[in-house]
Image 1 (tube, rainbow, N blue to C red):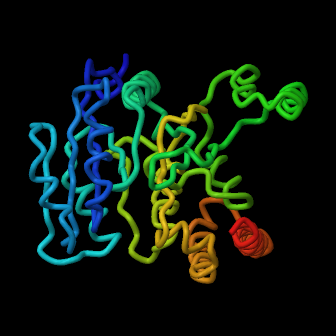
Image 2 (image 1 turned 135 degrees about the vertical axis):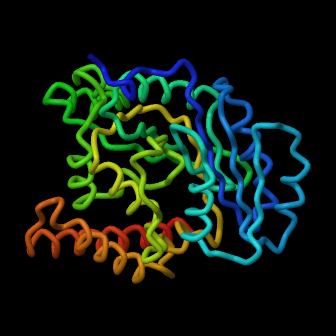
Length: 302
């Protein structure tokens, strides 16, 4: 007999939490992209972290009962504001959306269907499109791909087929531990919070020890609690802006702190992942080289 918790609900509440700080130029487009969703049983929880611009004033003009807006009396910082936003959510499933990102109108309904059908899934993750400040798509970031086998790889490299893994794999369900261990030695396949809809009951908190990879740490912790379902469709849009954490790391300004945080993350999960001393060293060195090469690439482009 299935437990009551495993029986799918008709329309479970979904919470989209949006922590905001000085996002007057983008916040309304972000909220609008959520409200345009074809999944109607949702709430949008926006927490303004004592912005000095008109972010809060704009949010107060929204006339939709699904939107709840809060303003902190003082600035709590990234971890503090993200955690407050998360604590105010009432939904069974949650997505944290930064105040300049966007999602497609059919994304939430697709993810909810997966989470309701497969209780072992802790979160659904989708590929990401990068957009500039005008909304133009300028790149993409693909999530973890399961082993395609020899035929799959040949087709991928000869034809550039993005979804060939779905043809040769039984499903897109992957052990969260498998993704985390692969990420530790390659790149972050879990971070960028807009890419993930997750089960609220399994989520922890954002760790203030991290700044550059605070979201990566959060989703590593979550992924280690079950399976991840990966949709290789670009249905979320991450805005690249000057002065953001991402731009700071890739531009070199924050690369040292970024590598230090990666070292901290490796130590934090070494036991859970079964990492030995050499593997921990190797993971940090790979990340250091990756950040260095990314900086060179950006300088050459500029």
